[in-house]
Length: 242
Ligand SMILES: NC(=O)c1ccc[n+]([C@@H]2O[C@H](COP(=O)([O-])OP(=O)(O)OC[C@H]3O[C@@H](n4cnc5c(N)ncnc54)[C@H](OP(=O)(O)O)[C@@H]3O)[C@@H](O)[C@H]2O)c1
Image (cartoon, rainbow, N blue to C red; front, side, top):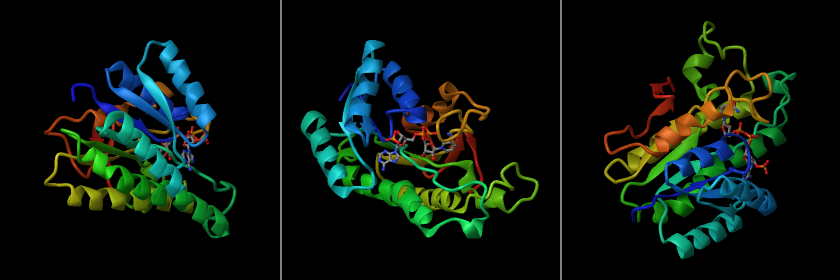
């Protein structure tokens, strides 16, 4: 049990990929989850070329069959999971449209990946996390999921109303609180992370934060010690309002 095993969903690019790199540098064995197997293998080869201990695993968080197959592979190879980072996510809305003009299809696809996908992956991998000496679950939320800040005209996110994405992260925050309650007497901690507004395909080239910094909150929450929080909403060590 000396080496920790981590699974990061959506780790073939962006914040997930950089989180894989930073976690592997600390000596964690990282499983790079990707819905496209070839993209995951390419990402793993890149980090292996840097001397890091990573492997690729196909997992589409919107397909139960894919999640089950991935869990069976992790169980067969490692027998347990120490860290689960629910990083995969989508933002599908048209920024130019008003909240009432976003399509129902965008709402459904957003919730499928950002909410139901996380719940499904967590349910399927929980038995493996329970075999860890100190399981950690990190849910990649967003400050855009904060209803407290969305209702404050003085807040920096007040004008950023992309409703399906924002509501999906609010729902993810609620799930984090409920899961933390269920796990409060166990060795597992679960927290929601806001990575920052990060330069990725999702965050856009104009985002103020570099990817190297955008991965830090996930890494910190993945490596929390026994005195760390459970059921918190965190950005770089600071607690955010729900
Ligand atoms: N960037 C920001 O400023 C920012 C801010 C706050 C929160 N976040 C959150 O941070 C997380 C990572 O974002 P990012 O900026 O790194 O985004 P990104 O560059 O767009 O990467 C998203 C990742 O999720 C994967 N993914 C999407 N749907 C999936 C599915 N059904 N199954 C498995 N993987 C799937 C993508 O795979 P493909 O390559 O196959 O599409 C990709 O690997 C997301 O949850 C996002 O909401 C980002």
